[in-house]
Length: 337
Image (cartoon, rainbow, N blue to C red; front, side, top):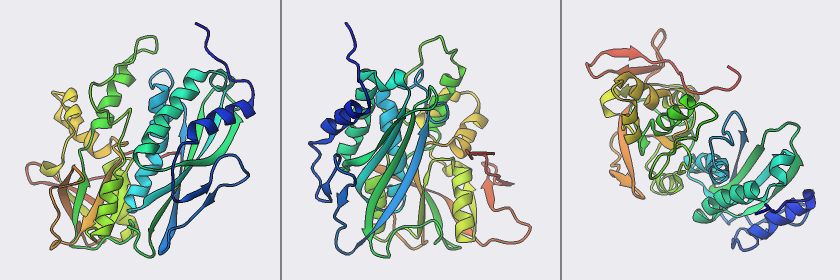
């Protein structure tokens, strides 16, 4: 059966617009179809804005990821940033550069939109506009811009952690890295292995409800999302807050998929500390704050503490299972390194 083709940018934009027409939103007055979108900012709130590139060959590969996974991951990256600040999503804007091989193939575009818009519907965020272009190479390039709202002056930030705070993470760590390993080991000519059940790598779930609860209930003193690996992201939080941190190895909540790295316990620990793309939340709270075991069905785990930043002492320390203090360097993802 012949695959329907898309002819030209106007047809591409019209196909996207028709997929988004049914999106109800109190914040969106005018969406795709004009020179600009028009949004209503809720009374008593201020805007938070984030943008994330998703680049083929860097963040996804079409021979590894389905179009639905690529679309989902493109939006999930930005939603996780909003979650880290306790924000409620208001609108998304997508800029998409496609090579002709993908731009004219309705299977790729429709699958990409299905993945993106299914996640958008789950979190009530309309796709309000964006841009389209022909890619200068054979790679797909996607940039997502997310707008959210937080009560004025109350957004969670990474620069407000204090010595004495306890350190928490949501969910489990290392699953995305463990799921990526068989992909890296599979020759390009062979079918990609897919994990059964919920997938932290192919379909990560941004923790919006958790972030909003942390802000609304004033539980967290600082927060950020875990996209580049715990060691790297915690370093960012410590530098922004001018503090240091200790992690208790025995407290780390390892994702069940890390069991696929058996019998190598070192590999499981490495995935949890440095693997990245878990899209969980990392946050701090005062010692007297009573944290529930879970929020919105997502487990909450205390993994360490914030300490004073002192000369000639490491910024991060791992307390091993034997009780030994080990300096911990950031070994997660960093572009241009």
